[in-house]
Length: 365
Image 1: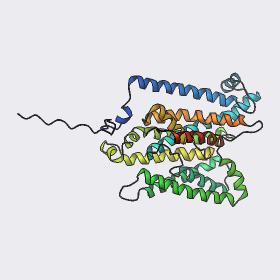
Image 2: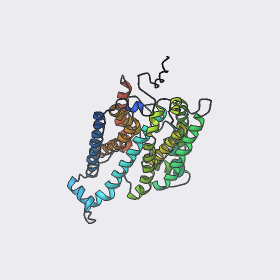
Image 3: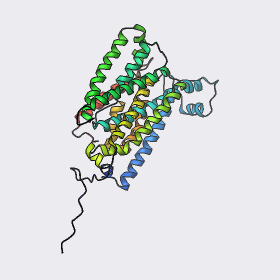
Image 4: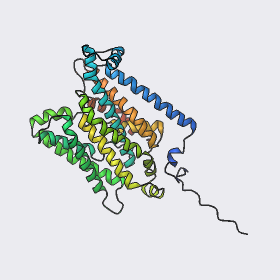
């Protein structure tokens, strides 16, 4: 009597990982101990963010002790000048740093997973270039002067250029591959950066406005600006986190992801929408701040591994801490002035990027 045929072996990756379900790669090394370690690390990261937030409220041209800061937040006295300084100047700046830091870090993680390029950042798909061009057009041609008025233009510019990149990257029988999307994004981003520079240089008043905005800063903002920035960034973060499971499947390749039931096109559209909202709103609110989206997800993966659920969650907490720390350093770096946060993140990001390039083993996606 012949034996019944053996069931087919599940598909495996080159390292022997079972890839028969979308989370196989992300759970390959998971264990209760490792999960507990990641949860503990998340709690520690949240506590660090709380400490850095209080420091951001306390540090500046005039130092304010933490007790006074907490008293200003929870028992505000509008006749106390220190309370006024905390609530009118430092609270909006700090809250904007929190939401923009989270947006840039998660945006970078989404793009790195989307393009399968661990050294990608929010500018790789031309998003920042599109938003910057639209804001510059609004200021230089239409004469707008308030950040809240930039928002529709920044979102429209980011979305339009992202869709143009996706359309160009989709030509050919292979569809929208990460390589073609990256090449299209870099080419169009460079072109629109040139258009932005041309508008700025043709008008002195536009140059005055854009030379500060273009560096990237979270200072000089008000709570009114948070009323439009926070909801848009919150929606973008939610969409991005909802894509995490599907991005784990896409890391295995489009064909295998489709075989596992992942909706590749839907995931790509959702990622593009999330990236547009996160990067567009951040650029409108704080200007193009570099290196946050590049560094944070990459560093996070050293600890979490490639599971995008952990990567995006950690990035959402560590990104604000890094941006606020950079802003604090900018406030105390010069005796009678301050460095804008975009300059500090670039100064900190350059050596970190060099260290990433020199590493023998880059953290995988």
